[in-house]
Structure formats: C-alpha cells, structure tokens
Image (tube, rainbow, N blue to C red):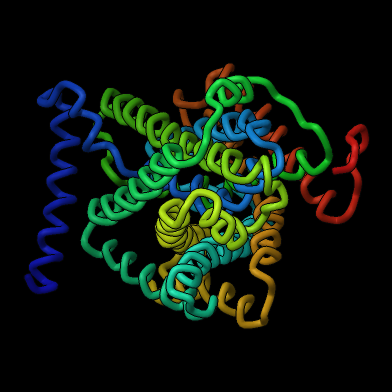
Length: 439
C-alpha cells in the first residue's frame, strides 16, 4: 500500500469514527459500545501521567518508603481527573483551547508572560520525555544518550506525521503504547513480591515520615498534574465533534467525563504498580535506588533479566509516547497564544532542540530530570489558575460553568497543588521544612 492509499485509509478511519459518534448522539447506537467512538482525547492525555518523570518519582517512593506513599499517587490521580475533565469541558463548550481563551481574555502583557512560561514548560516536558526514551534505548542497545535522543526524536517525528491523516490513527498508536506500558507493569506485579494487605492499608492512610518524603510526595504530584496536559486536553476536544444542540453537547461532556475517569484510572493503576514494583524489589535491601539506570541494573540480579527487560520496554514506550504528546502540546500552546499558524517543523523543533542542548552540554541525566520538574512546578500555576477561572466563569461557559461543589473542589485542589509545588521549590533551594525531621 503506497503513502497516498495509506493516508486515505487513515482519513476514512477518522471519518468513520466521527460518523459513529454522531450515530450515538442520534440514538442509533446503544450499549457499552457507545463509549468507544468517543475514546481518544483522555487516552492521549493519560500518557502525561505515566511518563519518565513518573518512573523516577515512583521508583524513589517505593524504594525508600515501601508502600507508604501510595496514598499520594491516589490523591494526585484524583486531582488529575478533576482538572482534565475541566479542560475537556472547556474545549467542548467554547470550541477553543485554553491557550486561545487566554489570548482572547487576558491583557497582552499577561498573555505574553503565559506564552513564554508555557513554552519553557513544554521544553522542560520534552526534556524529561526524550531523556526517558533515550535512557531506555541506551540501556537496551548500549548506545550513547545523545544518540538515543536522536532515535527517540526521529520516532517521535514519524509518529506525529499520523496527524496529517486525521485524529484517529495517532490516538490508536498512542493507545497501543499505553497498552504496552500497562501490560508491562501487570507482568511486573507477577514477578515482584507484593504484600497486598499493606498496599490496601497505605492507599488510604496518609503519612509523611520525614522531609525527604515530602519532597518525593510533591514530586509525585508534580509529575502527575502537568501544565502541558491541561492545555492539550482542551485542544483535543474543541473541534473533534461540534455539538449541533445543547442536548448533544451535554452527551458529549458526559462521554468525555466517563473517558477521563476510565483512562486516568488506568494511568493511576499503572503508577500504583510502579510504586508496588519498586517497593517489592528495592525497599528491603536497596532503599537507596533513586535513578532509572540504577533501578534497571538492580532489577536484573534481584528479579531476573525478564523483569529488567520488561521495565526497559515500558520505559521506552513511555518515553516515545510522552514525547509525542509533549510535542503536540508544544505545537498547540504556541499556535494558541500567538494567534497565527507557524510551520509544523518549526513548532516541533522549538520544543525538541533544547533537550539536545542540555544533553550535549553534559548535564547529568538525573539532574536534568530534577531541573525539568522544578521548571514545571514554576509553570503550573498559570494554566491551573486560568482553567479554574474560565470554567467558573458564566461569561465563558454559560450554564456549563462549574457548580458550587466542583468550584470549591477545583479551587481547594489548585491551592493545595500550588502550595505543595512551593514546598518543592523551597526544598530545591535548600530551605528546610518546619515540623518535619530531616531524612
């Protein structure tokens, strides 16, 4: 099959999905199958919640504190569900993405500031994603990190070409990569020893034994609620299927919410599995494990080469899929804020190139991952506050504005996440946390 035929097939795949969605809205499809045509945006965004940054923080959490920080993973996932549902609703109701709404409603100086901060966040996101994929390829094929990043970039750019053929092919590819990550960690649970009673206990019993636990807990949340995901979800839903009536719009929002719950529940379970695996493999004898490379080299003698190989497979799938999603978000952020089209190659290059510069300069990969998380913590307040503002605004959302309970939950969650991010920044600057013993 030549490229033209392949593109036509891909376009027809997207068109048939759109027709299926319309049939559901018209009542011509029933049963559980009605959810499938609407699946896609939340699956794509869910990749941000199982990227290499999550690998790093979850490994540290499990190795150092066993199952003790599982409750943080659960809490972070619940907050993520809330904000991704709000982002999706914003795109469905307004027909615009978060960046475009910021450009249309905020003063120019604030728009330019948000654009600059968001671009830096997109670059920091790509740094973490490319590093994850490169580390996996480097460990698997014994290649230099920089070459691994080039390979990751080539694969990422190739997958992004699916966008030209409609939205469905890229959603299916990313969904397949998410499936690889999920199946990999399901397999790890059968290999690593697990104390399931302790897992159930620590999922619902919050505790922070020392200052280092606070740092890791904030890192888990920071690696979960990410700026680019808040921008991207609104863009993925804004024109996917324009509603013809208010009844249709309500149905689309309902299906979107269901997809968010399912996709992020799966992402949350994968994150929980990461912590469980790290706890079972490292906590008793190797609590010092804090780096992805160390985790791989320690897994092989502890649990066998199969466990180490599965770990690498999931890391590579995570790095590649999250690189695609991060680059998509970078494109959307730039075009949304500036208000005019920029060549695809340029928008992609601007988010990819800084990652190569950092590695070329010889920066330690772990330090680079830490730096990227600090940058994301600094950038997070802008899209989070803007999302809460717009979804609570009757002027923007009409009668779809957040109800009292959702408004209160979103404000409390935003304040909590931003406060925790401030703790992370203070600790990164060497400021001790009062009331907590040192690690």
